[in-house]
Amino acid sequence: MQSQFKKTLLISALALMGSVAGVAHAEEAAPAAAEPVDTLAFNAGVISEYRYRGISQSRLLPAVQGGADFTSKDGWYLGTWFSSIDWIKDNGTIAKVKGVKGPVELDLYGGYRGELATDLTYDVGYLRYEYAGNTLAKISGFANANTDEVYGALTYKIFTAKYSYSLGDLFGTVNSKGSGYTDLSLNFDLGDGLSFVPHLGHQTVAGKGNSVYSYTDYSLTLGKDFGNGFSASAALIGTDAKTGSYVAPSGKSLSKSDFVAGVKYTF
Image (cartoon, rainbow, N blue to C red; front, side, top):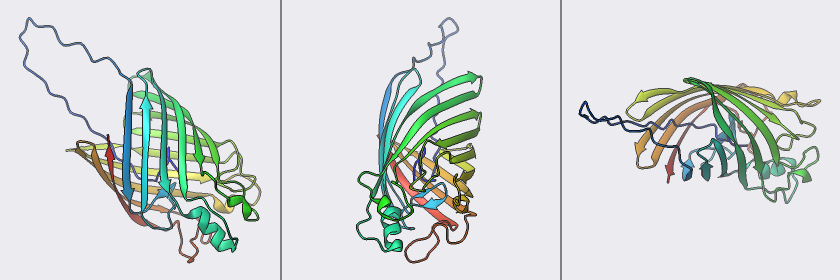
């Protein structure tokens, strides 16, 4: 699962920027503010475990990740992001169905960010979780893993509230159209490139008999921006998912509390 929006993992880092003030003569005019520009950025990283909305997507093992983002000066953006995963194949192993595959999650997203008032911004968009060539539907009781969501977010100073709504089945759960995820977070700038992000989320899985997969997740993430594109994060992540609802082939819980760390390079 991604994302997000993705995905993620469930892991965040707040980029900090400084300003340098020069001494100007009284008769000199202040420099004009820089005009917004279009930007294109790439990122690549590794993480000790890929968690998305609190659930391990990589069987509690490390994952390789990367992506690209284009942002226009007018507020529009497009992006893509990928991660190695294990959960689709693992469901086949648990169900004892051969040929179940889907080793990569590829997220495709786009949207618009704007300002409603001073310190109050919004973000609306669409996110496609693409599990290219996945055969999850070979397992009785499962649908294709590919998932489409729309989302909207409001940010006031350090507080962000976001809601995501599934347009079809959610990550292969049959008849789960209309599932929703509520995401609340705070972003604290601690100075010296450090950030602290507490998060609380709730995943509701719609559909008859699917409520067993609904749960609340939380995370506490410490991020560090080292400059020159390098950053790192460390997070404590957990959920209250029902016992047995998210498990690996070994029987280990994929929703138990765990410590997750990662590094990323943006260029």
